[in-house]
Image 1 (cartoon, rainbow, N blue to C red):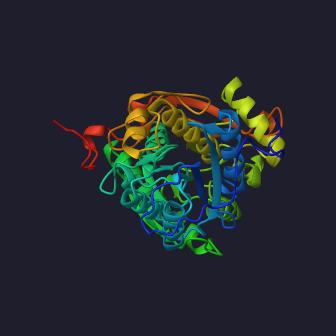
Image 2 (image 1 turned 60 degrees about the vertical axis):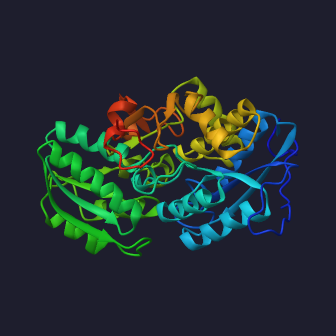
Image 3 (image 1 turned 120 degrees about the vertical axis):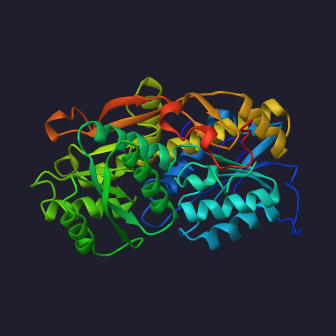
Length: 403
């Protein structure tokens, strides 16, 4: 069924319940997509995440426990206060039982806190901060698609093995970037490398020239980009303008989406290493999902958008199996059930809320290597979950049993 037709039983109207601590309404199971609709991350989440959510609800059949599945969405504007207020409104007034996407690390942490307070469930599919499964973990949050440790570990380890032993970081100055830089620094130092400098840039900077020049002046072999969204695109473009690479320096992008490669073009982005938890062209299942998504959006899905689809399917399957939307029972069911779908094979939700699954080391193709539209990445290595993610024994999450 085409998604532009009316979806099975989905209503976008909010159910008004006045009590500040209202329980979910009984006439629907509500899912919210909290994302960036208008900012620098909109291409990686935004309306594409809503499309992915609709696809999941449609594929599930539109009902669960004999109730229609209601979908709402909102633009968090990448601001934690706006995200928290909207999450509280959804939980208190709209009968929402689960929120997914959660673009922007600071906003994701805010929604996670509200979700714990309201005893619902949230999936973070579009943010990387490792705080979510360490000191800020809770029993109501699942960190789903990737985290900064895995992204940094996969890319940095591969480059260090190739002799890239001195690093400079270009880091966005908020929770996401700081978390990624910290994780990458540990990998570099563990493998005997050195970090020569760290240059912090503001979120959504208008000009990256001074930041790129500072990193270039360090003479580090590798400039690691601990940023995301349109900032990454602008950093890579600026680096090309200043001939970074002419003297042997290389760029490493820890979080570079397929949409960014598309915007940059292969001529500019070629040979860049990156890590990903998913890619549209991995296998027949991913390609089938991507084809349907493309028909609706005219672009291939990002890792985030695929994660939204998978998180909703995981949640709804657990609700069905548990026979309830009670957060504790649904979470218990999810943690005991491996995730095997087009997003992950053998994925496991750990005690600290991390969904551990295989990660991929990718390299951007040269223009001559691309065979068809959106054929942008080489798969260079599949990194098993136990090697990609922080060992559970090292997590500082109080939910983790270290005995």
